Length: 89
Image (cartoon, rainbow, N blue to C red; front, side, top):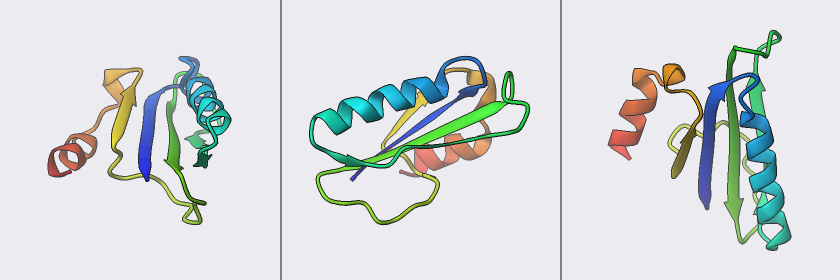
């Protein structure tokens, strides 16, 4: 399974970019899930989108803590946690 995480701020296209990638993977016949997390204020707030992709059905539904790929739209949203998880991977 390939796990992809998008990070950015509301209004930058984080959710839209993840949806475009999800649609492309779906059209290639892959199984995936696509979900986002953002606050009620949305514009300017931190946004995270997750896409696990596999050749088999995906049953696990949870946030991705250690993604294979990290797509960053705004470096200001990166925390020490994000960096530690990537270094340990």
